[in-house]
Length: 411
Image (cartoon, rainbow, N blue to C red; front, side, top):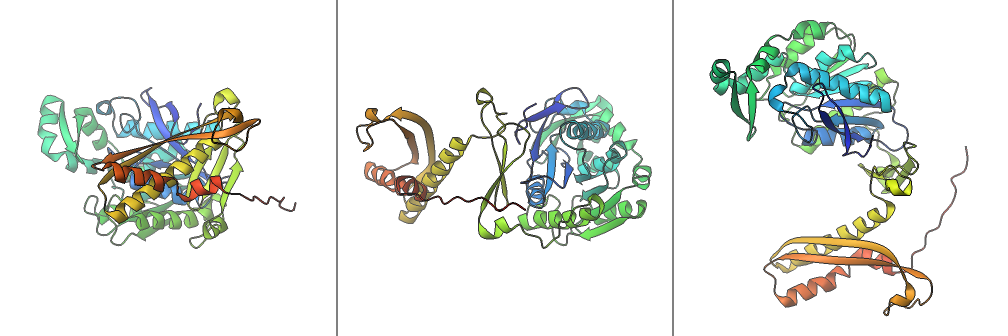
């Protein structure tokens, strides 16, 4: 099964394929976490992506996926309910268990928090559960459906607008959330619990956090998110949640992450590349707080779980080109609407390049096409092409490059 961070798929509760992303740290993960997103959201929400990135920076791998019928997952959302979400979580844990390690940490945002509380009993390896802005009872979402409740009850289903999108909700969904026994699920958790909640949350009130906390047995902890909003749209709120969560979970998963811990690579600007050993060529790349993957195509013996080294080289040149052109156009206040750079790398015979000094053997050729959108005149377009050739990465590729290489002393 393809393990690209954006291409993981596994069967969910209703038999359809669920789309998932596995964010891996450099080196061996201290633990695996499973993240459940909010009601009608997806794995790509700001909260999910930022918390996952911050956790991987602290050595914890995170699997986040789209529930059935949402995001990139297959299936009809109208046929799902809270119970199927819980079963989807169990399926995600099973995938991790089979391909890596079972999740030691369960994280749920909003209704996803209620889902991980209910699913925890079916994931025995999990030692720590964290909820973020979670409702005490799944039936809490009924208030979001209030305008359509009467129609759903009478006709069996209705179309409901949620967060600017339309969803079809069936009567079975209402019946399912009403049947959940949250108090028993939380009381029988038998795992460490951390409750995150903002006292200013207008979607799920702080009273819900109090009810979850009171229903749970020790060890349990509560962290106030002060003025954060329900969806954690501010980056600093998501990073704070991840930092506290990693430090708290280390007590229960045997890790050593702390809130103040910052990898040396993030301080120095070093890019670190480690083999993951998931495939012949698969590499995990850490560039500051950012995590990337590199691999080779299947035809070359790789897993195709990420761009190849030459793809990454082209991406660096393309990004630098676009940024440089944008900076110059903005300084000149020119009407540049959008820059698109397309690049292709190939090896060619030197004798086929009239402009090249080398005349024997083969040379590298990078073809670069720049598309400039906007009401630009010919002189402006010509000047921006000249500026593109002055991007720092372009200059580096044309200059003499010295790469001193050494072996790190063996321990």
